Length: 202
Image (cartoon, rainbow, N blue to C red; front, side, top):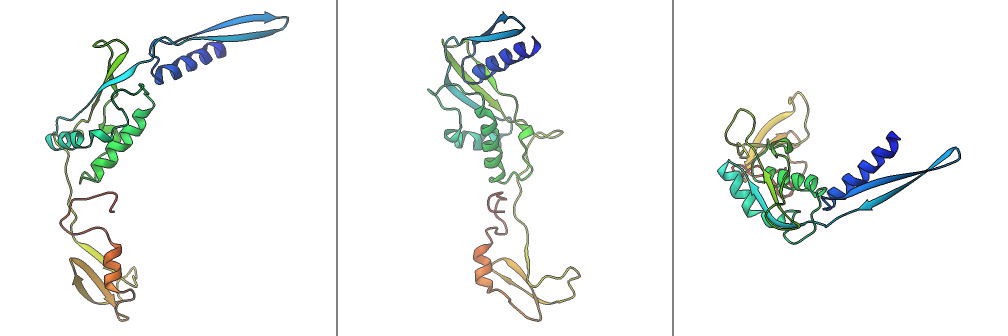
């Protein structure tokens, strides 16, 4: 009996995630000799659709970036409400923040998904809030500092005999000199000193 009830709850939760917020699952048991036949009846009710999507952060710079990138949200006005997209949305926001200099941004700083279904019939307003890190009022943006490239690297660094800077990248050389052409290495390195940190470039 407990498994029957849990199964009904899981079915109901699944329908809620797919936008059927008033869905009910009713299990019906039919004993047959020493066996029990169970039928599940789904009463889905109306499906809810996304009306507006609201992204917000009390941090002005984070809030600005959220508004600029809002069109990329997995929640779109007019589409069926699908709560399972929230995990994708958190990943998207985290990636966007880390590519915008916020190297220490984590998904835990994104609050729970909030819905307002009272404004319009069978419509839902979606609210997502990005909170500041614990113990601080603002998120910190990071810039790329020095970039050091060790060719023919040895852990004790005793084989380093000279160094040179090429287009802002600091190359450490061994007695063999450049093993790989410096211009080739520079093209392969996407980070540049002074630029905002980008997880993608890293």
